[in-house]
Amino acid sequence: MKKILAILVLSFLMISCKTTANKESGTTSSVSSTEEDLKYYFKGTGNEPFWGIKIGNEEIVFTSLIPGKEKIIFPAVDAIRAMDANVKMYKVSNELASSTITIQQLDCQDSMSGAISPYSVKVEIRNNSELETKKLSGCGKYITDYRLHDIWVLEELNGYKVFAADFQKEFPRIEINAAENRFSGFGGCNSITGQIFFEKDLLRFTKVISTLMACAPGNKEGDFLKALQSTTTYSIGNNQLILSNPSGKLAVFKKVD
Image (cartoon, rainbow, N blue to C red; front, side, top):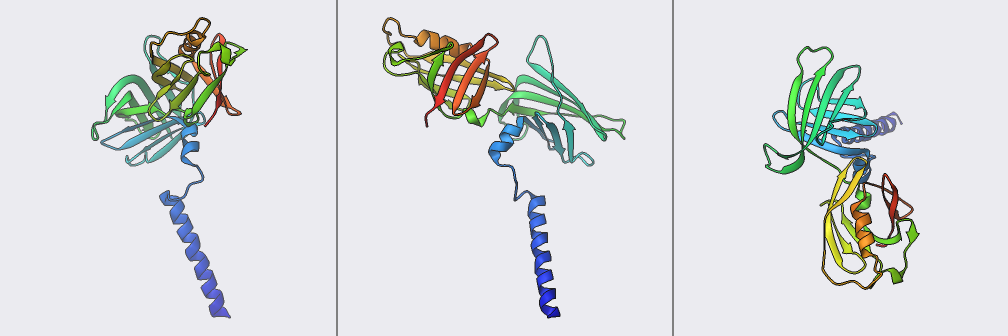
Protein backbone atom coordinates (compact mmCIF):
# COMPACT_ATOMS: atom_id res chain seq x y z
CA MET A 1 0.00 0.00 0.00
CA LYS A 2 2.86 2.35 0.90
CA LYS A 3 4.54 1.61 -2.46
CA ILE A 4 1.35 2.39 -4.37
CA LEU A 5 0.93 5.65 -2.44
CA ALA A 6 4.52 6.62 -3.13
CA ILE A 7 4.08 5.97 -6.87
CA LEU A 8 0.92 8.12 -6.95
CA VAL A 9 2.66 11.00 -5.15
CA LEU A 10 5.67 10.77 -7.50
CA SER A 11 3.39 10.78 -10.55
CA PHE A 12 1.56 13.84 -9.26
CA LEU A 13 4.82 15.70 -8.68
CA MET A 14 6.07 14.86 -12.18
CA ILE A 15 2.85 16.13 -13.77
CA SER A 16 2.96 19.32 -11.68
CA CYS A 17 6.57 19.98 -12.62
CA LYS A 18 5.84 19.43 -16.31
CA THR A 19 2.88 21.81 -16.20
CA THR A 20 4.95 24.46 -14.42
CA ALA A 21 7.80 24.08 -16.91
CA ASN A 22 5.42 24.48 -19.83
CA LYS A 23 3.99 27.68 -18.37
CA GLU A 24 7.45 29.11 -17.71
CA SER A 25 8.66 28.25 -21.19
CA GLY A 26 5.60 29.87 -22.77
CA THR A 27 4.27 26.69 -24.36
CA THR A 28 0.87 27.29 -22.76
CA SER A 29 -0.94 30.58 -22.48
CA SER A 30 -4.38 31.77 -21.40
CA VAL A 31 -4.18 34.67 -23.88
CA SER A 32 -4.83 34.00 -27.57
CA SER A 33 -3.03 35.92 -30.31
CA THR A 34 -6.15 37.99 -30.98
CA GLU A 35 -6.51 38.90 -27.31
CA GLU A 36 -2.81 39.79 -27.29
CA ASP A 37 -3.32 42.09 -30.27
CA LEU A 38 -6.13 43.90 -28.45
CA LYS A 39 -4.17 44.15 -25.20
CA TYR A 40 -1.21 45.94 -26.82
CA TYR A 41 -1.53 48.53 -29.58
CA PHE A 42 2.16 49.16 -30.27
CA LYS A 43 5.19 46.88 -30.36
CA GLY A 44 8.84 47.76 -30.89
CA THR A 45 12.12 45.84 -30.92
CA GLY A 46 15.83 46.50 -31.13
CA ASN A 47 19.14 44.67 -31.35
CA GLU A 48 22.52 44.61 -29.66
CA PRO A 49 21.34 44.02 -27.00
CA PHE A 50 18.01 42.46 -27.92
CA TRP A 51 15.05 44.28 -26.37
CA GLY A 52 11.33 44.74 -26.91
CA ILE A 53 8.56 47.09 -25.83
CA LYS A 54 4.78 46.52 -25.80
CA ILE A 55 2.44 49.43 -25.10
CA GLY A 56 -1.15 48.84 -24.06
CA ASN A 57 -4.03 50.60 -22.38
CA GLU A 58 -3.27 48.97 -19.02
CA GLU A 59 0.48 48.40 -19.01
CA ILE A 60 3.76 48.99 -20.79
CA VAL A 61 6.11 45.99 -20.83
CA PHE A 62 9.85 46.22 -21.46
CA THR A 63 11.86 43.02 -22.00
CA SER A 64 15.53 42.56 -22.81
CA LEU A 65 18.67 40.47 -22.44
CA ILE A 66 20.19 43.20 -20.25
CA PRO A 67 21.02 41.84 -16.77
CA GLY A 68 18.63 43.32 -14.24
CA LYS A 69 16.24 44.48 -16.96
CA GLU A 70 14.93 41.17 -18.27
CA LYS A 71 11.27 42.19 -17.77
CA ILE A 72 9.92 45.44 -16.35
CA ILE A 73 6.20 46.25 -16.28
CA PHE A 74 5.11 49.88 -16.00
CA PRO A 75 1.56 51.19 -15.54
CA ALA A 76 0.13 52.73 -18.71
CA VAL A 77 0.28 56.51 -19.12
CA ASP A 78 -1.02 58.94 -21.73
CA ALA A 79 1.42 59.94 -24.44
CA ILE A 80 2.94 63.42 -24.57
CA ARG A 81 2.44 64.56 -28.17
CA ALA A 82 4.66 66.86 -30.18
CA MET A 83 2.90 69.83 -31.76
CA ASP A 84 4.65 69.82 -35.13
CA ALA A 85 5.33 66.14 -35.88
CA ASN A 86 3.94 62.65 -35.29
CA VAL A 87 6.06 62.03 -32.21
CA LYS A 88 4.78 60.58 -28.94
CA MET A 89 6.65 60.33 -25.66
CA TYR A 90 5.80 58.11 -22.70
CA LYS A 91 7.37 58.85 -19.31
CA VAL A 92 6.84 55.84 -17.05
CA SER A 93 8.06 54.62 -13.69
CA ASN A 94 7.44 52.06 -10.96
CA GLU A 95 9.04 51.20 -7.66
CA LEU A 96 12.05 49.62 -9.39
CA ALA A 97 12.77 51.56 -12.58
CA SER A 98 11.93 54.53 -14.79
CA SER A 99 11.92 54.99 -18.56
CA THR A 100 11.25 57.45 -21.36
CA ILE A 101 9.93 55.93 -24.59
CA THR A 102 9.81 58.01 -27.77
CA ILE A 103 7.93 56.89 -30.90
CA GLN A 104 8.33 58.82 -34.15
CA GLN A 105 6.63 58.20 -37.47
CA LEU A 106 9.78 57.66 -39.48
CA ASP A 107 10.80 54.70 -41.65
CA CYS A 108 13.16 52.51 -39.66
CA GLN A 109 15.29 49.60 -40.88
CA ASP A 110 16.03 46.67 -38.60
CA SER A 111 19.79 46.42 -38.16
CA MET A 112 19.75 42.62 -38.50
CA SER A 113 16.85 41.57 -40.76
CA GLY A 114 16.76 44.71 -42.91
CA ALA A 115 12.97 44.86 -42.56
CA ILE A 116 11.42 48.33 -42.80
CA SER A 117 8.99 49.51 -40.11
CA PRO A 118 7.01 52.78 -40.20
CA TYR A 119 8.15 54.03 -36.78
CA SER A 120 11.46 54.55 -35.02
CA VAL A 121 11.62 53.89 -31.28
CA LYS A 122 14.01 55.19 -28.65
CA VAL A 123 14.07 53.91 -25.08
CA GLU A 124 15.94 55.40 -22.13
CA ILE A 125 15.70 53.14 -19.10
CA ARG A 126 17.38 52.69 -15.73
CA ASN A 127 16.78 50.90 -12.49
CA ASN A 128 16.23 53.24 -9.56
CA SER A 129 19.37 51.86 -7.91
CA GLU A 130 21.50 52.93 -10.90
CA LEU A 131 22.93 56.30 -11.88
CA GLU A 132 23.50 55.51 -15.55
CA THR A 133 20.61 55.46 -18.04
CA LYS A 134 20.65 52.81 -20.77
CA LYS A 135 19.85 54.27 -24.20
CA LEU A 136 18.39 51.97 -26.86
CA SER A 137 17.05 52.44 -30.38
CA GLY A 138 14.96 50.26 -32.65
CA CYS A 139 11.87 50.02 -34.83
CA GLY A 140 8.18 49.44 -34.27
CA LYS A 141 4.62 49.54 -35.53
CA TYR A 142 1.04 49.92 -34.35
CA ILE A 143 -0.98 46.71 -34.28
CA THR A 144 -4.09 47.24 -36.41
CA ASP A 145 -7.26 46.02 -34.70
CA TYR A 146 -7.78 42.50 -36.08
CA ARG A 147 -11.57 42.95 -35.79
CA LEU A 148 -11.46 45.33 -38.77
CA HIS A 149 -10.34 42.42 -40.96
CA ASP A 150 -13.65 41.59 -42.65
CA ILE A 151 -16.14 42.47 -45.37
CA TRP A 152 -18.48 45.33 -44.44
CA VAL A 153 -21.60 46.47 -46.34
CA LEU A 154 -22.97 50.00 -45.92
CA GLU A 155 -26.21 50.41 -43.93
CA GLU A 156 -26.23 54.11 -43.01
CA LEU A 157 -24.57 57.18 -44.51
CA ASN A 158 -24.35 60.56 -42.77
CA GLY A 159 -27.06 59.57 -40.31
CA TYR A 160 -29.55 58.14 -42.82
CA LYS A 161 -30.36 54.58 -43.80
CA VAL A 162 -29.30 53.80 -47.39
CA PHE A 163 -31.46 52.12 -50.05
CA ALA A 164 -30.71 50.28 -53.28
CA ALA A 165 -32.02 53.28 -55.24
CA ASP A 166 -29.21 55.41 -53.79
CA PHE A 167 -26.63 53.50 -55.83
CA GLN A 168 -26.23 52.20 -59.35
CA LYS A 169 -25.74 48.46 -58.84
CA GLU A 170 -25.50 47.41 -55.21
CA PHE A 171 -24.73 48.74 -51.77
CA PRO A 172 -21.19 50.03 -51.18
CA ARG A 173 -18.88 47.65 -49.35
CA ILE A 174 -15.31 47.56 -48.12
CA GLU A 175 -13.08 44.57 -47.47
CA ILE A 176 -10.33 45.44 -44.99
CA ASN A 177 -7.04 43.56 -44.80
CA ALA A 178 -5.82 44.48 -41.32
CA ALA A 179 -2.53 42.59 -41.67
CA GLU A 180 -1.51 44.65 -44.72
CA ASN A 181 -3.32 47.90 -43.84
CA ARG A 182 -5.19 48.10 -47.12
CA PHE A 183 -8.78 47.83 -48.33
CA SER A 184 -10.77 47.26 -51.50
CA GLY A 185 -14.43 47.20 -52.39
CA PHE A 186 -17.26 48.91 -54.25
CA GLY A 187 -18.34 52.52 -53.89
CA GLY A 188 -21.85 52.17 -55.29
CA CYS A 189 -20.80 52.80 -58.90
CA ASN A 190 -17.05 52.13 -59.17
CA SER A 191 -14.58 49.67 -57.69
CA ILE A 192 -12.35 51.23 -55.03
CA THR A 193 -9.00 50.43 -53.40
CA GLY A 194 -6.80 52.19 -50.89
CA GLN A 195 -4.81 52.01 -47.69
CA ILE A 196 -5.64 52.43 -44.04
CA PHE A 197 -3.60 54.38 -41.50
CA PHE A 198 -4.00 53.01 -37.99
CA GLU A 199 -2.76 54.26 -34.64
CA LYS A 200 -4.24 54.13 -31.15
CA ASP A 201 -7.71 55.72 -31.34
CA LEU A 202 -7.13 56.70 -34.98
CA LEU A 203 -8.28 55.19 -38.28
CA ARG A 204 -7.97 56.85 -41.67
CA PHE A 205 -8.73 55.63 -45.20
CA THR A 206 -6.00 57.01 -47.47
CA LYS A 207 -4.79 56.90 -51.08
CA VAL A 208 -8.31 56.01 -52.26
CA ILE A 209 -8.45 55.11 -55.96
CA SER A 210 -11.61 54.29 -57.92
CA THR A 211 -12.40 53.26 -61.47
CA LEU A 212 -13.81 55.96 -63.74
CA MET A 213 -17.21 54.61 -64.74
CA ALA A 214 -19.84 57.35 -65.15
CA CYS A 215 -22.47 57.20 -62.41
CA ALA A 216 -26.21 57.75 -62.81
CA PRO A 217 -27.70 61.02 -61.51
CA GLY A 218 -28.47 60.80 -57.82
CA ASN A 219 -25.88 58.10 -57.12
CA LYS A 220 -24.41 58.71 -53.67
CA GLU A 221 -20.98 57.24 -54.34
CA GLY A 222 -19.38 60.68 -53.97
CA ASP A 223 -20.96 61.13 -50.54
CA PHE A 224 -19.80 57.67 -49.52
CA LEU A 225 -16.19 58.29 -50.60
CA LYS A 226 -16.17 61.66 -48.85
CA ALA A 227 -17.37 60.03 -45.63
CA LEU A 228 -14.76 57.30 -45.93
CA GLN A 229 -11.93 59.79 -46.38
CA SER A 230 -13.22 62.01 -43.54
CA THR A 231 -13.05 59.16 -41.00
CA THR A 232 -10.76 59.51 -37.99
CA THR A 233 -12.22 57.05 -35.44
CA TYR A 234 -14.25 53.84 -35.37
CA SER A 235 -16.10 51.41 -33.13
CA ILE A 236 -17.06 47.75 -33.57
CA GLY A 237 -19.92 45.88 -31.93
CA ASN A 238 -22.95 43.74 -32.71
CA ASN A 239 -21.49 42.90 -36.15
CA GLN A 240 -21.38 46.58 -37.03
CA LEU A 241 -18.52 48.91 -37.93
CA ILE A 242 -19.19 52.59 -37.20
CA LEU A 243 -16.95 55.24 -38.76
CA SER A 244 -16.87 58.73 -37.21
CA ASN A 245 -14.93 61.97 -36.90
CA PRO A 246 -15.22 64.88 -34.43
CA SER A 247 -18.34 66.09 -36.28
CA GLY A 248 -20.21 62.84 -35.60
CA LYS A 249 -21.12 59.48 -37.11
CA LEU A 250 -20.35 59.18 -40.81
CA ALA A 251 -21.14 55.61 -41.85
CA VAL A 252 -22.44 52.36 -40.40
CA PHE A 253 -21.57 48.97 -41.94
CA LYS A 254 -22.78 45.43 -41.32
CA LYS A 255 -20.42 42.44 -41.36
CA VAL A 256 -21.40 40.00 -44.11
CA ASP A 257 -18.76 37.24 -44.26
